Amino acid sequence: MTMDEGFPARVLRTGAYCWVCGAVFAHQLGGVASFAGWTVGSAISLLSFWSAERVVRRTFVPNAPDARSRISRYSFLKMSLIAAVLAACVLLAGGRAPFIFGLCAGVALVPSVIALKALGRIITRK
Image (cartoon, rainbow, N blue to C red; front, side, top):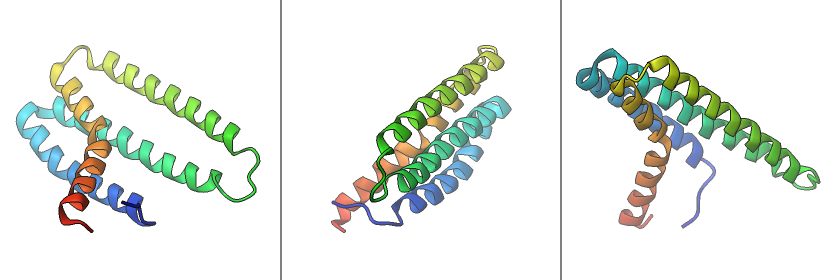
């Protein structure tokens, strides 16, 4: 199975649709705290995927001798930033479980979309 050129854009578009549906469910099930957690987690997930896709497209070009060091710097910066944002969210949430559960679910948005898209391709054999 190969990935075509438009796959990242489709993942982002499907992720945005899933955010809308998930926002409604999160608000109904856990209130504003759950909705806020879902929104922050989804934003982290979608922005992380979008930035990784852009960096990979711009870094791995023919005759790029410093690609390995650029991807290492990007990875370190990205993981540090994500850790800081998640730590700040948890501290600001003050231990509110609905926010934390919504945040965790939101962070899992893009990996879930990718897994479901792969499963759909396997099932339909396209």
